[in-house]
Image (tube, rainbow, N blue to C red):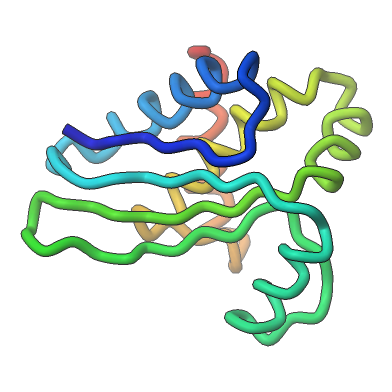
Length: 137
């Protein structure tokens, strides 16, 4: 069983975000144990994390860490989502904050799995999977 833990999320948003994570976990069914932690933080905190671990001095919407696992079928990941940035992105996209958080949760899990969006080709591959999953919610 892969545990999904949400920290600092409003209660009403926990079920849809958890469901989004579960949808994304299905992309790699070989993982049968572990935990995925999603932590909602303010812009200051995500900027600090971005600076510390990526050497980038700006606010980003999400940062994901694959923390490995003790066994081949185990996964552990921490996903940080910026509260204010994600709210602003939701407004810019014309959808609810809930929808934005589900989109970012899927994005974060895919990063934990090793998907990247740094090159156009990698971005196209990742966003194809991400958009397909998001439309199923």
